[in-house]
Image (tube, helix red, strand yellow):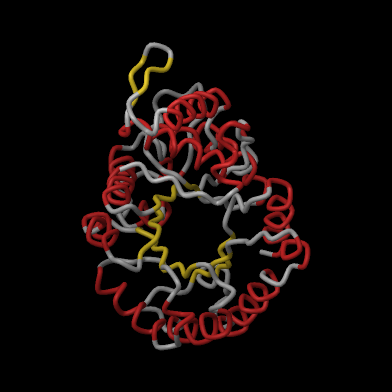
Length: 322
């Protein structure tokens, strides 16, 4: 956690924007019997992270969240009291694992909201980790407190009682055309697609699961690009600091895409957002929204923007195309 927070600070200064979140883990990170001490450590790390003088001096903010235990775990309420009670102002979100239904969200929100205004302002990020949760994911994504939905691959595979092979928790080699890995097993791919679709239906952020082969950079890049380009995910989890830069780069739009978006939006602005022809192709407000989103992704991932459109972000202008 300390290494990840330091890398986040370094890359925030490098790119001039916070290009990845750090989620401090109270669920899998805490040893059995040591949940309270671990939660207090998370509080200390979150509060210290937001007091980083270099970032404050540069006018930069960072995103740090905390993953609590599941709502049916004996340590859940203790986590809420300790972590949210002690670091609500330092947190950007609270992550809830093993969410099965809207009822779980309501239980969590009620416990969190009881701690005051700062706690009530915290968005909820949820982990979908079972077939039943996938079945209910549209209702879960529609919940007003939910900001992001993540896929919990390992628990999802394990919840099938051996019906899905262990290979579905991994990533097959580029030369392997047969293994049913996490991108080719039908049940796993269906779950990923359902989660992404539910998120986009309600304007929430779909976050793709981990790649455990953290020393295989090629597998990581292939996975991240497929998650982004084919499955519609806009974020992805890492399990090791070495994975962060390749993931950020894989999710970033290519330079040619950024340049195309800049040309189209520059022409659109010059036409007061009426229809324009760029390179013999007609564009109007429907496509302007898409190309604005390309620039947003570029800015969020530290890609340099052409001078013609950089002002949209430098001046904190919010562009809305109806």
